[in-house]
Amino acid sequence: MDGYVKLHEMLETALRQAGEEVGMLLGQGLTATLTDSLTFSKAAYFGDLDDGVFVLDVDSREEYLGQFYLVFNLRDAILMSSLLLGIPAQRIKEKQRLSIIEPDDIDAFGEIGNMINGAMNTTFQSSLAGKSHLKLQGSKKYVPEIDPLTDDDPLPNGDYLLFRSKLEMEGQEMHHLDVLIPVALGNLFDPQPLQAEPEPEAPSETGTAEAADHDAGTEEAGLSGETTALKTGSVAGTTGEDTIAVFENDDEERSRMLEMLNFAGFKLVESTLDADIKEVFSKGNIRLVVIGSQDADDRELAVCIKINAMRQDQPVPIIMCAQRWTRTAVLKALKYGAREIVIKPCDPDEVAGKVRRLCRLPAP
Image (cartoon, rainbow, N blue to C red; front, top):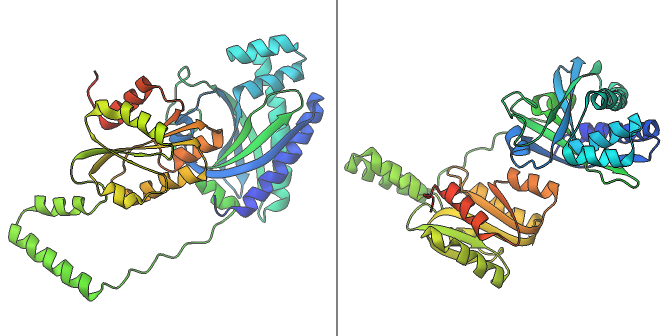
């Protein structure tokens, strides 16, 4: 994520200090290392969430009014609160497996949350020019497919700056602490320069002549429908036979994917990740794109970005398939336009279900 350098530095310092202090409280070595920062909507963040989370609300007061959120993996919250309560290791594992968080856990984790909030308070007050005060407000649990996801819970709809910190504790498997700050509040903490609007390009003589010819043709037709058709045809991959495009470098994997997609009855076009996307899209009315790879790294994400940018006015659904995924890669893929994430080896029934839903095909 470009920008927000000051906010990144403040959180990096605050989370490192918070990790050290919580580690001392628990009698364990705990580190919290800021690793990534992205911009996400609430829908994208929670849309592909597999694990439960524990959310702490932080109220920002004085000259920086707003609210932001500390989001822990639920198993991490259970682990830390149980260690503070002195619960035996076997019982901790059972509680993690069953996602059990009891009133005593919530009270104990409140103490941990207060330490994290204290570290952030100290850093923000010493770093910001205006008066700042952070107060921990409350907490809530959210487990996908069990707890309701509403407009306001477990946090309000909107766009957020996501700052991800990796948690590490010796002898324990841990995940991440995510700090989700609404973009408007992030801009109060760390104002960003306004981006100048690009000046419109002066039309060339050729372009003016073409526009005049187009207008004349439209007037002769006298039909608004023809104008709409001309506009649609100007968008890449929106004319011709209904088509699914498959981008994959491995020949065998690409062949297997084409076999899985035959049921749809669409024209199938195949290509490598380095292909000219505009050329591929010129081969039909692209209804769906499938991107395949071993790792979901920047190369594959770049293909997703290019497609999303080219079809931003008429988005095309994208399925990204990879053998190895990281949480960050999933979040980036969703941010850059992927509608579905698939782990290789691909299950034909899973792929078929996603294709039917995205292309609105009838059930078999």
